View (cartoon, rainbow, N blue to C red):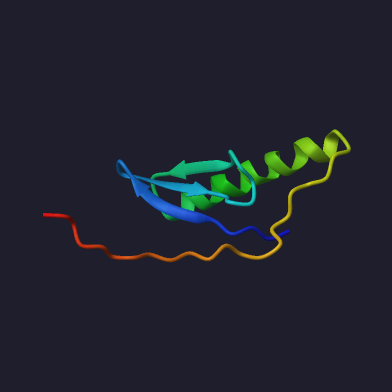
Length: 74
């Protein structure tokens, strides 16, 4: 299974969110540490519904990630 991860820097930590798995996130001091922990978090998020016989959320298509720049109002 493959999931898109969004990594951001928050208060000196690397925070990872998994858009296809609401509530699934992780963090670490480095990107590598955050990604390692994200794998563990994803495994737990996938195991729970599987253990209950429910469908496991899958990522149908990667999300579009974009940024825009705006002018601040004076």
